[in-house]
Amino acid sequence: MREELLGSLSWLCRRAMCLWKRKTGLTPAFMLLLVVFPLGILVWVVVTSRPRDRGQTINTVPIHDSYLKLASEVREATLHSWKAYKEHAWGMDELRPLSQTGTLWMGTALTMIESLDTLWIMDLRGEFTAARNWISKSLNFDLDNDHVSLFEITIRVLGGLLSAYTLSKDKLFLEKAENLGPRLLSAFDPQSVLPRSEINLRRHSSKSTAWPVLQSLSEVSSIQLELNQLTVLIGNMTYALEGSKILKHLHAIGKTHGLLNTLLFTRSGQPEHSSVVSLGAHGDSFYEYLLKVWVQNKKAAEFLRQDYIAAIQSIKDLLVGYSKPSGYLFVGELQSSGRMYSKMDHLTCFLPGTLAYGTYHGMPEFHLRFAKDLTRTCYEMYNQMPTHLSPDFVIFSRAPDSLADMQTQAKGRFNALRPELFESLFYMYAVTRDPVYQKWGANIFRAFQQHARLPSGGYATIVDVTNTHSGHSDEMNSFWIAETLKYAYLLFNETAASLFPFDQWIFNTEGHPLPILTTTNPLIMTAYGKS
Image 1 (tube, one colour):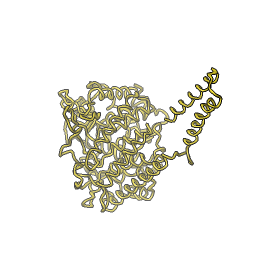
Image 2 (image 1 turned 90 degrees about the vertical axis):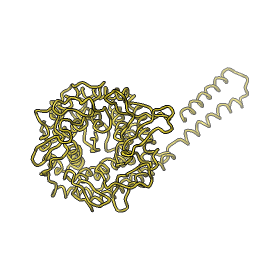
Image 3 (image 1 turned 60 degrees about the vertical axis):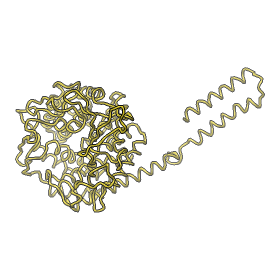
Image 4 (image 1 turned 135 degrees about the vertical axis):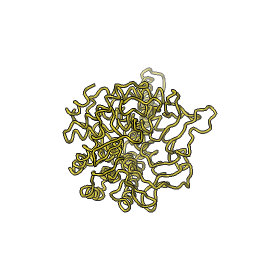
């Protein structure tokens, strides 16, 4: 608006001078007024639009301060969560906030390790040191447990340790990561294209139990950032090589217009064609890691870039629909029949953030337009619920006479404090600088404060987001501190966010920041090649 006004005033001045030169018969006094009046307005616009002290305009001062205050509230929410974990579940995997006990899912102090980088970023050094001391004395991977997920322990524990080492430079975390690494390799069977899903950390053995012959697409294709970083830090190419074999195989096999089914046969690595194509459960982070693994090693592996671009185009062509009556863009699921089902998981809300990060790294501009539309839809999944918190999935309406854009189902009405929208809001604000993303984040965080916070300590899953008096489930997932609160803090605290420029950092699928390599690493290059 200011630029348009200045342009108009400039035209008026030029027009007045033109009339003067043409000797139009206008009086000198009138001609003087015709010149001086617009010049006066021009001076007023320039003066009043100058930034105030400290380089801030009148309008941005209260907004900036309010978001810094929100960042402080997010930090306090982290402390509220951490103190409850420390008091009731110290050294265990996750807190049960209602019964005030802990769980032993993997037996690896999951919440503690996943929280390390969040504590560091929020400058909670006392809490970080307490965790570090426990890890030094008590963390032990010699656990006789046959059901440790290769995917989960890689993205959560290995990723958390590598991130903590990168930020703090404390070699303890690298030593623990190096101790964990060989145990993960037991999942890779030379007789199978894909790794087995579950490992025994003590016995260095593995098996696939949930689906004896099948593997999840996202689980086998979303361990490469962490394995690559371990290779770089300890100089052992085996980790990167095993991860690269999977992505090279997925590049080579036949796809549905650039997309893959969510289930694959473990031994052959081929798609199980009766399974859906989805950006939700079992599909999501495959597409995320195509981009991020390419970025990680100085964009050297061209096949990853090609696969990512082809996938996003196919998502736009095959999975995108528009709701009725409001026309919200959503990403559905492609069924084996070829029909698009208008179910969208909250997990899919990671996609706008990945798209925005990709445009920062030179991806096509329409990716950002796609991201903006999808972010709006994800926000409406929160905004249209009575609690202003999203269900775990919705079914979008497409019938012309629909009165509501989205429907919920009883089995999906819970909110598990998931991070995907906060993740995307962080990326979208960083790339566009549009304050609407901070505003939306503020609304969501306040809803978490109102409905998920427990006075007795911690936060808990909400059972039914369509009921403002809903109860809670007895769980506080480790990703609440590792991702949701971290991304919220980085969204509101721009000083903290500036420490992670996108040309130097990537965040793994569990929200753990890892460095982009400053030069192409020869071990990674050997594993992936240039194409």
